[in-house]
Length: 175
Image (cartoon, rainbow, N blue to C red; front, side, top):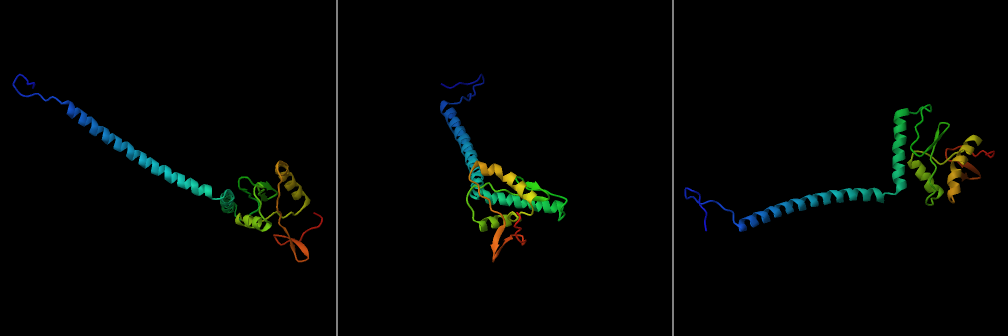
């Protein structure tokens, strides 16, 4: 039965089929938009995850060395070659115009490997110049040495018949 207005024109009346089709098409459009958003978000998360994996696969010591090298470069830019200005990288110990990095002791390295790590940080293995410096270093490593079996390399090596420091100085037997 059709409805008409007073003038006899047919009135438009939505059919239930039309309503269902409209709702169905609208739902599909909304679902497509949601899927697009999820795919885009998934790609973004995958990119972030890939970046994190790249950072995580880099050994923490390599990352730390990189950060420390950046700090040393920054110090050089800020201070130049003057000894009156000292900026030590985070986690380094400062004493009497010198910065010292005390390894965490995790993982074993040979003396040569440790020397290379230091050189990568624009530093060198510890050269003990006097008793005061030796005592300062001893106090600093004492806490780590008590926590676990800690091993620390210093920059002393055998050269022919005698001992030498990595900076070229001869070993002082009084130390």
